[in-house]
Image (cartoon, rainbow, N blue to C red):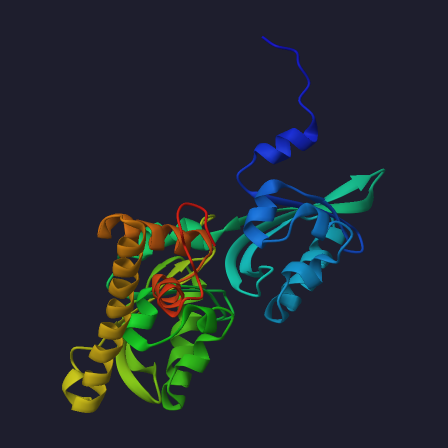
Length: 307
């Protein structure tokens, strides 16, 4: 067996998870390659900067206070909340922070961050249901691609908002009790029918909650939404046409982008789609958003790794 000593920096570089180390004031003193990939800041840009201004959005400021209180008490903290990338987009993340102590005194903090979107997206992106992952306070930390097709919600607008903001005012008290019950113990709860925001109006939806707060991968309440068949006849023909038009436009933009890339680069439509999809996943964007940028001429996407 080899007795070679592997430097700590090389060990951190080999990890697939973002590892960030700060001093007790929150200034970055360690930033591994996976952190560069997740947050978009290079190590040179991040070192010496305040972690709050780099990665913590306004909606998660309360969590940062909770983390520091736990660490000062000698207790590691683990939980999920949105983190901010360099481009301003929010990423649903599972974060585990632990204090670094010397002679019983807190001298630094090391945190490991996992992109929950990357972990959950393969499970949820093919689902016909819209799926949200919620914190215990109802804050949205993840939104599946179907939220835009079914309800017209852009993922970047929904993540970081409260579930309450998506609900009809007359249904909010009902959901408050429903959600409180769901957070009490793990497992699924029966679905309820209520009205959710869609465009300038409202649509009936079946909403089911499943408590995964203790699950180390999810650390949240999963909210599944689907259009209500029972109330579909109550919606106006104009609303149904608008929903179909939204889905059609989204599909059309993707097909236009595929055709453009295939014609420009002499590749198959399937290869063009894979290029769009891979870029969307790598940049934490929806497929529709990437296709729209390609069609508008704002994104070249000329081959692997092109921007």
